Length: 226
Image 1 (tube, rainbow, N blue to C red):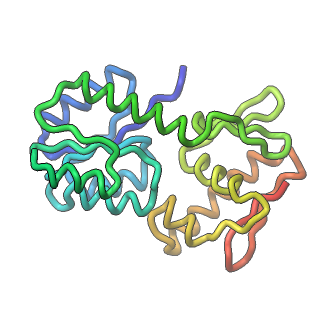
Image 2: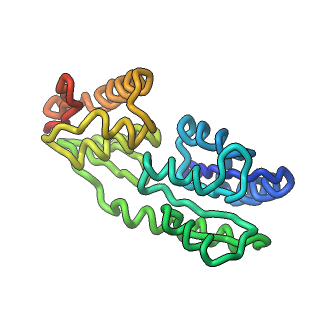
Image 3: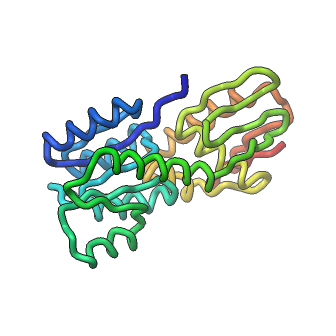
């Protein structure tokens, strides 16, 4: 059975949030429900969702501000805004800061699900539909799978994104600060230590081909060579 897609839902109306959550779960999505923008940002950083559904008007941090902060970290994750506002300028602002779609309340659950499915399909096509070669390994980024001969290993969301960036910069140094800000949201000490752990995990998963190495370039970053 395929791993369920994880959706981060930020909605401050408890009843509506629960209705959306339960409806999406009946379609086999995993839903992380947050009641405000601050909690949503923390959940995004810790849980690595694959799509965001953000209410625009929320306490502590509104949906537009939240989207701007996440877009600075991740340029690819699909974002759908939910809003009771109907002014054209609000719609324009939503798209200008990186939103992919916009639903005005009230809306039908079927419409939300169709839009989610469309964005997820588009994201997969945009990233890559081909297996990436890493020495004797093959890497399916959209499915987060690493293949060696007849065996496969499931990667986590962050492992897959880190490996994808390493592959795309093959034989070049992947700037440590840049990738920390992109995948972790900052480049502080704790995030750097977390990244080191993920690099160690990837090295173990790539160790069956001795020609494949992730080299630590001290003071700069990492380089994937094969």
